[in-house]
Length: 158
Image (cartoon, rainbow, N blue to C red; front, side, top):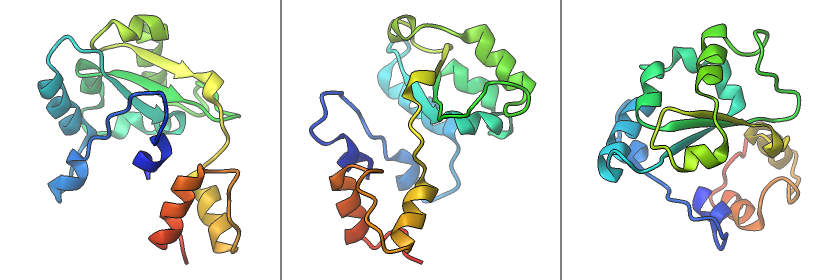
């Protein structure tokens, strides 16, 4: 689905399938270590997550070491606040200490953070799944090629 979403976009995106190909339990830290080994120590690498994942980032395997391999950027949805009511203090503190501009991240291999507040699009997999289960075609929520893929593979059906 990610390939479909970025098809014919002007943004170069590499989709890594290591976690799928492992066929075993896998952790983000393992994937970032492997990609860093492929790219070398100086290439700028960004791990992009939804800001909602910051609520549980401190429970991830070796979460503080993620910064040793990539810059961590989070895209927020409307209503998300980087405060103690939504994000553990240790995660908020780590993000604040490493906060950088996108320009600086482009030239830094790893260790920085950015919370993209201006990417706030209120779409979730749950919204897409619910619409499909109601028999609706959620054209406004996903690109047409992604929706075609979902329908072709009968995803999100109850």
